[in-house]
Image 1 (tube, rainbow, N blue to C red):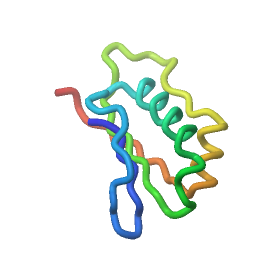
Image 2 (image 1 turned 30 degrees about the horizontal axis):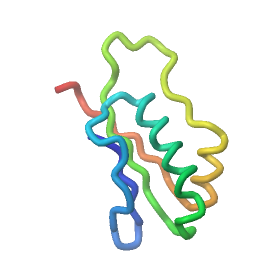
Image 3 (image 1 turned 180 degrees about the horizontal axis):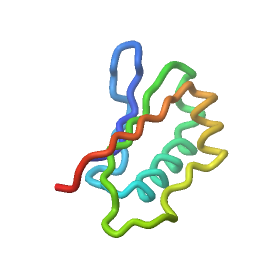
Length: 89
């Protein structure tokens, strides 16, 4: 799985980030980098960023942190964040 960013109005996929990455911390880091790189390129609209992840083996805290900067960009652009948990394969 990976992160999909799509426009809600027509379901058009805008980006596919962190292909084949299942760990949430790495995905959030990739999403933040993508947001910073694309902040000025995307018009404000209604978007969905869907992170598909599976729980890390032996996870016990210290997971992903979505920065204030990333949240600010998402708010500015109109991006909702979905967290879709999948079982380990």
